Image (cartoon, rainbow, N blue to C red; front, side, top):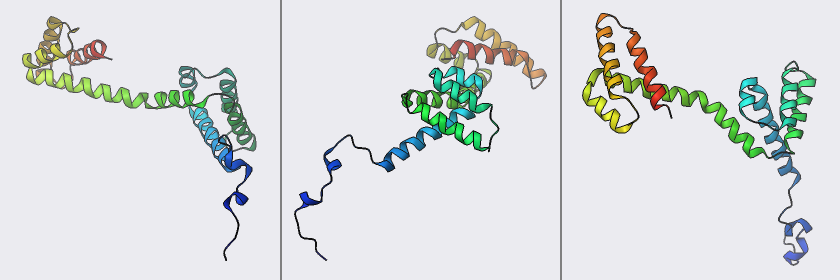
Length: 177
């Protein structure tokens, strides 16, 4: 079946409006904001404090934490959190959430890097100390050599040594970026 007529006849008034948001698109945006609210509710109080949230959002999230999960009141409160978050810019909140959630991964990765530095220092000695000093000139050569020498002495006696832990702590404190 062919429909006869010009294409202008079939256009809708909102086809020309660039700022038009369909009902379905609006619902998707609201659901995304509400999901972000759920993620905020799952965070601890200390993590929320680090995020610098808008006061109204923070109050709504903290009120949600006081309600028993899997109840109708909890569901309604989550919807309220989503409603409050629609009035604020969500992008900084999402960026802060990503930062808070990745912090543990970043800390673990940094700890592994310092552990590798320590192992190389203990196995390769002066050549690795020189390389490390070239990469990080803020380190003290004398203290580094002293810690490596002491750690090697203690490791000969047993698997765990105080000097080895001190070397790791020194690297973490001085190189930690």
